[in-house]
Amino acid sequence: MMRDVKNILRHIKTYLGIGITIVCLLGILMYILINGLQHITLDFLFDVSAPRGQTIIPMVITTFIVVGLTLMIAVPVGIGSAIYLNEYSKTGSRVVKVIRMAIETLSGIPSIIYGLFGFLFYVIILRWSWSIMAGVCTVAIMVLPIIIRSSEEALKSVPMPYREGSYALGSGKFYTIAKTVLPSAIPGILASVILTIGRIVGETAALILTAGTLVGIPQNLFSSSSTLAVFMYTITVEGTDMNRAYATAVVLMVVILILNTFANFIGKRLKKG
Image (cartoon, rainbow, N blue to C red):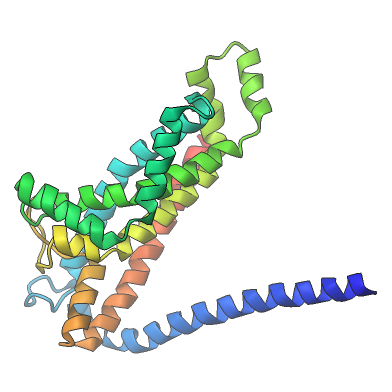
């Protein structure tokens, strides 16, 4: 009898937690959509000739550039590090302990500290000025812990018999990892990429200090420009036009949806391949 009561209470807690999460998510989405959709116009979305800050096109372009370049840098390095830690390194070695300590330390550093580092190193020492490239390199360091840890867990989830079967057929370690382990770990690695995209798109502090807050279509990788999140933060803090801030939030959610959908599509194609 007591066991049945405990099971019922456990189910109630579970469903209550799920319900609260869904209600909070829907509440946030509805609030943003209600306040933002009414201020989205064709000029706001597509009129490139409009005055600075009156159209969202430059910030959308910058956001896609920052996300794409950051993933190009961080994903290969992160997955490569995860492969080394899980497949090649010796358990308990000093090198592995140092690497894991570095990863844990990086994951706990506030984004403003990354921004200060990027400002001092890329903007001042390397003399890149406030630029997209400085922001990309800074954010790439920020998201490395997410990719490494998630990819490593995905690799650990691949059953050992998969590897043993490949070795038994005469395959080498590299071939086994490339053709057996990685394809099986793609869902977990894809999850890390999606988490990374969300972190990049929503980042403000590090990009303000490295990429700047200039509104406009970037001429090259070493010119300053604002992402959607930075632009939304700037106009919200200034309080100049909250209507545009809500409209930008709606566009930001759509951009995240597009990027996540594209990442899922690529992941499925890679898995089939």
